[in-house]
Length: 261
Image (cartoon, rainbow, N blue to C red):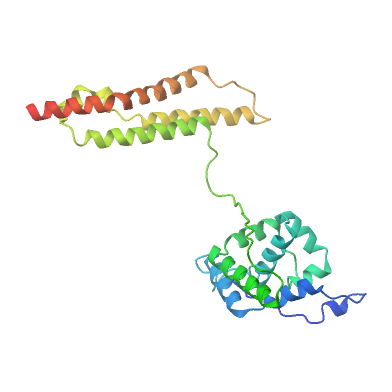
């Protein structure tokens, strides 16, 4: 469930065993991040983290904490692991990020939540900072600094066998479209040309992946991948580029035969 912020704790620094307050730079940034319009834009971005993020589910990292962690990480040039370690053990950064006595989110959570913030929202934040800085005479706002965040996505590891199987699948789909527009007798005469080998290629790729996994396990006996499987795969996959090259000529001939009959 989406929550905006933790309850404000004005006495957080007062409970410290020593007198402490934010430095002037971070105090100005703290005041800037209180902008309600900016908080609203970030809240709308984080509301897309789940279909019912506004209604159900456990409490997520607050919007205010997510925004302040993102700003702090960029200001100091930290990685996600570094910002987790620095904020977790720092009274100053806990107060700035408004985490207070609550648990510090994991670095992976920080990365995923920060990636949900739209580029337009970050541009609005940057424009707001530059506008305030220009008004105060701190900067002229002529330089631009960019930052990129990479998040792991749900894509299978691109092994050689799977890439070759994908290539056979794409070529087979192209041949299938050509098969629909030529005469049926031509298809019967050239069955080997119009045959789709996609299922066979996928089956062989799965067999190679299965044998490779068994070979990589420590408890399973080490068995080399059978050479006949690799030979069958190479024979199956290497035939398709040749077929793809001759298809235009065969297709032209097939169309000519269809017109004469």
